[in-house]
Length: 266
Ligand SMILES: C[S@@+](CC[C@H](N)C(=O)[O-])C[C@H]1O[C@@H](n2cnc3c(N)ncnc32)[C@H](O)[C@@H]1O
Image (tube, rainbow, N blue to C red; front, side):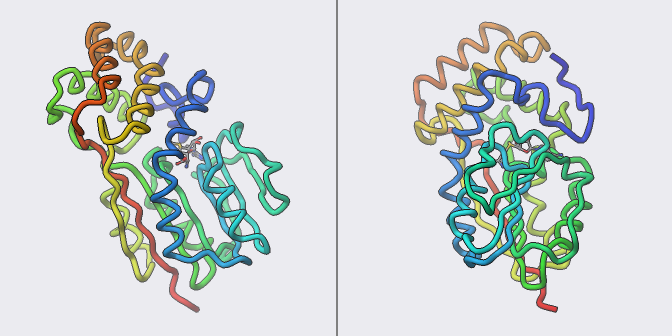
């Protein structure tokens, strides 16, 4: 398996949807993060007639949530590979297969645009933020969420330092920016949005049982690839798996930055 970035689709290699555990991993991700996301979207306040765009919709939970809250509007869910999204969920939900680094929408066509754990995967992400701002109607909201990873070497668990460090190195080699999340609020402001704000959700090893299950699946999914790429040994992977399964005292190593801003009224 190549761990090198090949295209605008960094969603390959360790994160390929052809891997047998990827659907489960994406659904666990939803289980971990949907509560925080829906709280932020609730602050923005979705109106029943809003037109919403969900970028990089993954396994679809937030697109479905938006469809439930905007029954007189419409929801467009875009993903470069939408195979896990149920296009029949609601008549006003459109599921579209597209690369958001090149896809375009008419100016002013959405009241809300949301993406979670997507922009960190994209090249030229600031440019895509500017395009997304164009797609917003005056008064519309852009909500971006991404994960900021702390350095693996600082983990209190030696078994985690090497294996998590290998995983982060593999993601970086796939073109994923592990610290872009921190720049989101300033980027939204620089792109002309008002009322920019942020909330942050901690995550990591031992933080709660669902996060540990997400990390366990990640280990199952990536362990052999890390060994093959020389990023960890089989013993280190086995020790890291045992550590995750022991639900250790928390080692907070990620922060999900949820940031939002509003396009000025015309
Ligand atoms: C980590 S998953 C997050 C899924 C979902 N947003 C969530 O948080 O549950 C990233 C998603 O972005 C999609 N993606 C990555 N690059 C993309 C691109 N260039 N255009 C559209 N979708 C992309 C992937 O296919 C994947 O479904």
